[in-house]
Image: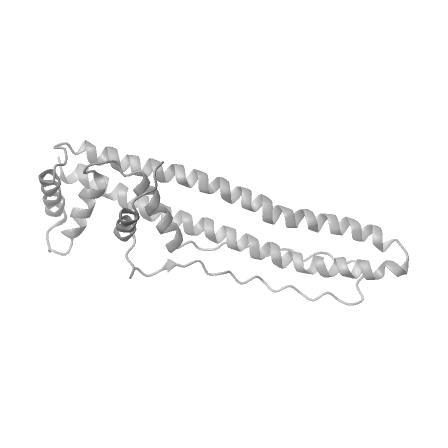
Length: 230
């Protein structure tokens, strides 16, 4: 697929997400939960259990830019839903009733050479939603891979060190230094699991909220097209 026109991607981004919109996340690093220090006399402590993290998603600037580029890549030649909606937004500050805004945008769309059939708007709008759905599927797979790779690896290491410590605890006193080193690592793993889970889950939530922001706006316009442009 050819590279999207960067100016078109920026136009689409500005269409869905205004720079002054509140609550646009920039991807801040979540603070890991503190872990309790290991008692010096405990030869075989249990690992710190990760704290359940349920981040609240926001419209994320990096995902907004990514989704705008997805739409730009799937923008067909000629006037379509996007050009219609761009005209519609330009009428939003004129004080017209919503139905009049849609009707005026429709008249302008046809004057610019758009087809005299609103089905071209719903068809291309559905095409954009399909492109966004495909991108979400790919994103979800990448999240699953990241979870399996990062969190799963840490969990496997945790289990391995626990088993090794059980064996080391039964051996002679001179291997105590090795046990202590493993215990230090176990104390840190709980916090790392919490941190990595928080980062990835936050990204998932931010993507889903951004995705919903895009798709709901398109669906809302489609519903109003049907209502106002009969």
